[in-house]
Length: 306
View 1: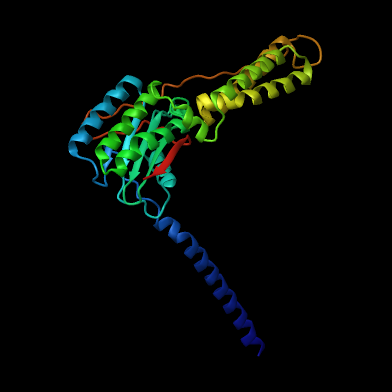
View 2: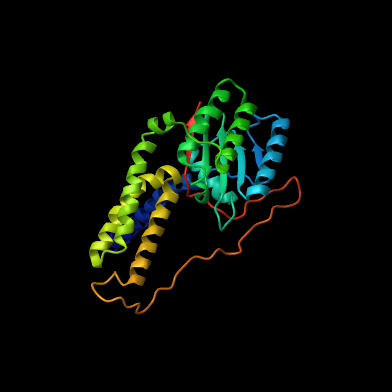
């Protein structure tokens, strides 16, 4: 009896381990199987859903190539026949990062993705262009340029108008209307400008306040400036500017000797700064091939449907 029992329990343990392994494999297998099949980047306009005429594709290719030569900003248009049960945001991020849109040192890429079967679209913006093409502007472009034409069935006109608006926004020629600002749930310009001025004054005064009190004034000033920075620069770029301002103020305070209770010694010194690398990319001379420069998404954008 004892020998049978001893042989029985190891069998149960092996079976349990097998069940656990099978369960884990079952849980993770769909994730591997159903990830979006990102196509190879070959052109600036890749119409895999077949919704655009060849004339429109050729015109967009020419306009985007010229825009990139003038500004270094990369814009890609992709239409997909299916989102493969993923959200438009997930697919946009996967494609953006796989294609590495924008220059590596600038992250200045934009992706316009359209899924006609799901009636979804998104403008995904690289981190480096959030100040030029804000979430609010992307939302307005979807609402005013893309959606009306898509609803009427004119995909060529919608995509053309959308791409033109994206280029105009990056050039600083496409601004959201006051109605867009108010209905977006963000503060209006009239609300934000006084806050930004007060915050700037607090931040400036904080440079000359000794010890910890000056740091508190700096934080209060920058917090007051954040809505102003967010509205005009976008959330991510605005936050980066606020952090850089904080570092600059702390550096100036250290140089003036105000970071400590007394004395103006420049003691150990502070070394830092930013340097732009020589990272750049060059597209192929072939008209049938085009590649990203190494950027990533991690920026803003907006999604919509029709």
